[in-house]
Length: 435
Image (cartoon, rainbow, N blue to C red; front, top):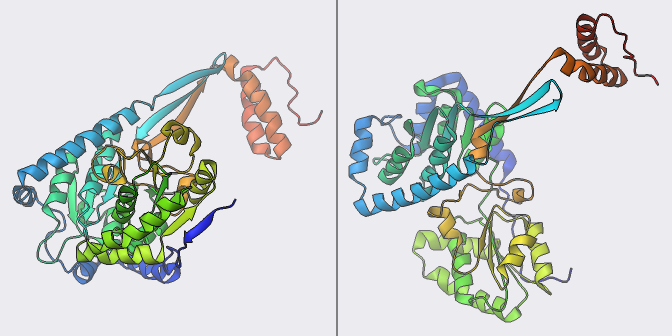
């Protein structure tokens, strides 16, 4: 490759994993041993909140009354889009059965998990869209019980718009608790909740580490790092729009990488010229994040042609991938590693983050090289079954006995032997592994 870095990241997006791990492990152990009381103790310490953990219907209605009607309509619009997309995904999952050989039938069933825990960030930003993305998808999947968990703000509680979104999307319980303690409460079934079978939703490094530690005991959507975004742009791209899109994603956090990959030097240089001014024009809280992310983690990469651009993108396997270039169909067919793809100037990652219908809970830190994002399938267990007639199982039993003995698993072989002896007492079978 002949790619040239016009801007190179000076830091990686990895936190001090060992320190975070020890902190989170100790909190989880404390809460598992101490139950509701210990979880409340951590909530008072970290959330600085001592109100109801599980919101009452009256509290939910009071919060909903605070949400402006215009905002309600926007939330309903996004919910409808996410719901319809999830329903379309679900239509692709079918129960099937196949007669493997005459008399031997095998099948597949899709069964939703029983209880889902949906974490909705609510610290610096109130992630209304995360409530929509996680709760709606779990509901469409058919989960029997859905808990939405979001950190309350001191003296305020959970943001009313998050409560409204979780409520209309189908949450059975809304929990005012954040961080590791919220994740622990859902996992351990505290406060009368059912123990979660799966935990989903974005969060900070402590939430992500809690999910990592608990994985195996419960299912998770994915182990997430800081959000990241990459833009592929050629000489037809609008430099101002490219720069704006990069800044829009850099505001997520101080360690959120954004990358521009292009084969046009003039475009790259113009974007680099524009970004600082666009960042300075943001409100202070957004500006601080974007400044650090652009300074320390952003990269601008110049490639020789579009094939090298595509190969670079696949190597980075970004969470969000935008193409602002000619021949969008070529890019759609060529690109293979991304969480969600945004083709053309007419769409943007912000649309997918909030209201398009595709899910915004996506693989980060290169995980898009092997997995996709949150979907209906994460909440579904694809299980198999089989049944057979005695004649249908005959050859299967013979092959099973031979393969088992070749592997050295005599017990497995005898489970086949005993059936052949019972069902076909007058027949002789060669059940040895030898030629």
